Image (cartoon, rainbow over all chains, first blue to last red; front, side):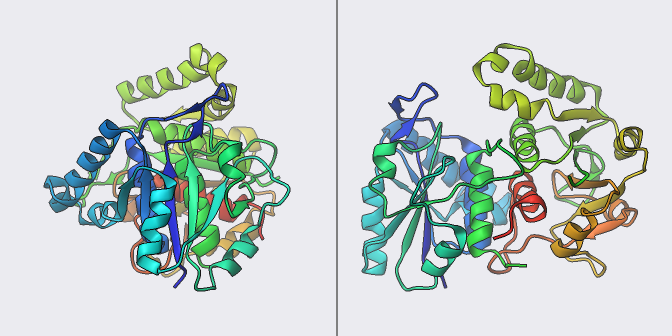
Length: 186
Length: 186
């Protein structure tokens, strides 16, 4: 089984103006990405934010579906949302994975822009055939800052469609990328 | 260029209990699926509901991003949301496509369940190489009723992941299916 972990980070990310900001959590990001993580058999879904009130909000949403009335009403939703772990930073995520796997993970960042050394989906699928854990990081807002991207082990090539327009939501991009990495090839 | 049209229908769909209902429109369905339709070069994105107040709501959301302050703030969002057309029924959608293409489209329905005569992604990609327009229909809520599925020209095989769990959101499923049909193969 591939040792792929997924993180969605709200800090550091880039604003529309290019500033580094902390973005707010979007409820449907939690639902859609946890369901994709569960569907494709990734190991965990980390939601990263340093803000205490945002962490409380995420915990409240998870609890509703895993312990509250939502858990009874919709068991499929429960088994997705219980994949979520809340962390302060990507460093904390990597340490959590290290404590599970006994190996520090390689980080792979996603970007809507092309990078000269980006790996493609074939290469990433090959990396996932090894025993090394990999952490795939998605940014919210206008994406991950260059300073963050340059520190990652790998940059994944962007999802491209038919032309120049590639403005998928982070929810859609996460689903497509998990399908390309872990879905059945046809 | 493939003649693929996409529709998201809110009636007829199945409730959790199995009844045929009209579901409410979800704002992020409009955003995410129109962005995926634009990214992958599908022709139009039809939002189908017979309810007058729901049609008004959809039109209000579209106008905000195509004519209002949202159009100035976010041109990429505008060019996605202007792909949306609102229709009463799938029959109205098919007639609209016929008026554009001068050929009545073949309908392809999506389902999270396996059907004995389902076509796979290879077969659908081959169909899209022809001149015939195809309408790909997604259902909201718990999906499209059997009576609707049985009237379609084709049923597309479900998106499967690593195991038995396949509870993607309709937003995620639409993105993955468009990537499989129109994305660059790797």
